[in-house]
Image (cartoon, rainbow, N blue to C red; front, side, top):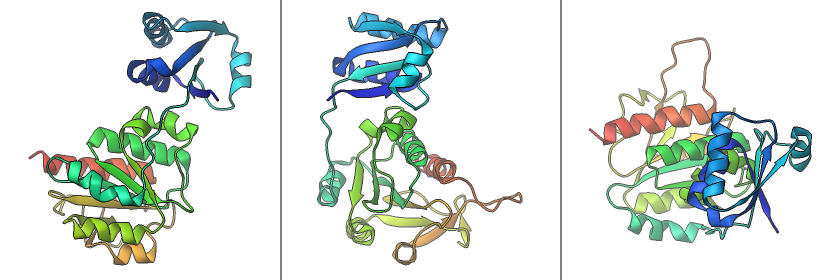
Length: 246
């Protein structure tokens, strides 16, 4: 069964990385901007069939924001990760492990944005609970802009057990919480590290918090008490990146 990939950036990444999967490309007939021309040129270079359609016809293919471009492609041969793969993935890492743990992020847009930030920051794997949390979907893939295919995403049945696996392998776990005494600019985020981001609204669960090695926070100067989880993830990851490249 074919899959749909939509959105200018997501389709562009697909054409660059996995053009052999693309069966045909639908493009909005009245789009003549530079970004859509770039996507069309990539498809032409790969000898992919391009079909022009009216905006209404594209809207009928998906209820998501497609930006006038939809690729029909063969399903990707996905690598499914499980908790048992964590030691193997750790052994493959050159240098200090850098890991993101999402404790119950439920919004697929937030998950996609977190994966995109994780890819950009050089995170080696993302770990999340299997239950009561967002999983990889078409919406997540679109928002992630290719990162869902590049960063190992590991859904686990027991998050605390997975955290203990990391700690036994020498990875320090820093949980993010508003009541933490040290902020991300004071904390040492170098070396083998896993950063835990809590769920939208509720933050980390009690057991998750109790099994972190230490807590950190983003200092807030305004009236708003917290950031969206995907924004907070980007801020925290890139402070770690700043420290780790010094």
